[in-house]
Image 1 (cartoon, helix red, strand yellow):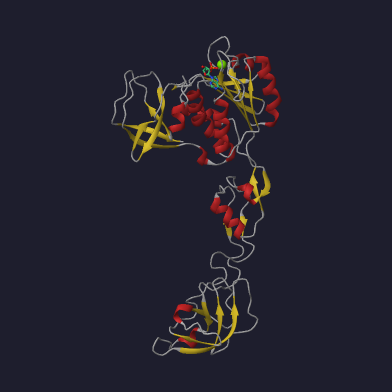
Image 2: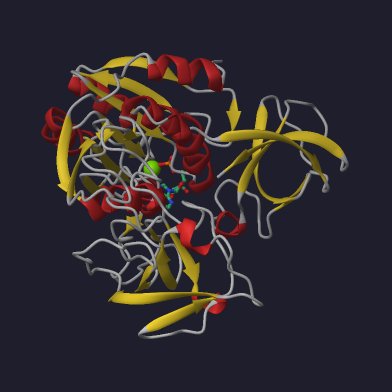
Length: 399
Ligand code: AMP
Ligand code: MG
């Protein structure tokens, strides 16, 4: 049986990193990948400015100032942030200045107001300053022509604020991958409809859809289809021309109602693999239909989740060019034991606690949902005939 890593390589070889870009409003670019090198159009700050409230002066005038021998200067103006002083500060002169205001011509430093008598017509300075000591030069942060952010940068809040500071109202970003999600199953009802005998609510479609949204790859379509191979094939035919990836859930095992096999046959899709040596969720199936990749997850909620995280995320990383979409893996000490052995490696839901990991609270069965909401990682137990003892190291994949 195929190993997870081999399956990831096979899937990633099927998709290409999206190169197309589009322009969006700055705040809509949050979480997106920058589609251009962003070059500063002006110095930041654009003018020399005062780093404090005080008096803009010529440093040379203040050389002898001390509490015992204050220097007296004539105050020739007052300047708030946003204002401009038209004249030049001459020898023996000072301009009252507030933080962020442009330092007037002639002045080369600022004496903080706590070191003065706060004079209005004339001011006594009790301390000296060297030229450019209390002075933010133009371009202190960056200069016109500097590359602020490179193409491919993931735009987090800080990056968005840098772009705003540079005056960008809109920004070019890489196009998002186009992904569709289809859950299957005649027993699966949508939340909001009454629960009837033998039915369950569709949790998997919401898992996959909301995880795609969390990973900044919101699907273009998310829908449910009954166990009808023809109808499912029709949906895939409709969606494939406008998607790079279609994720289906359920119907990949060997039962009579496991319709994905028949669906792929009807489509004439090229099968890439079926079944991986991973518990839970092993019957995962992958195929290529035209230029669209079909990744068909098992319906068991935790199986679907494991294979989404471990298989679909590397595909998203490849499609977007954002390697951070792949899960990060670390070694941790497993504090709990697990009683069941397995012929293949097994994933469980865990919670990281420093250098250790514990099993997440709740039932770990593949069909159980609630433990997932308490987990912050998947932890991997190696294939082994007997249970896994507490106190040994395991791989942990951070969610
Ligand atoms: P399947 O892979 O279709 O054989 O489904 C395996 C198990 O997962 C069955 O118990 C299904 O009822 C359940 N299941 C399938 N799809 C979903 C879904 N979308 N939400 C919740 N459970 C599901
Ligand atoms: Mg089913």
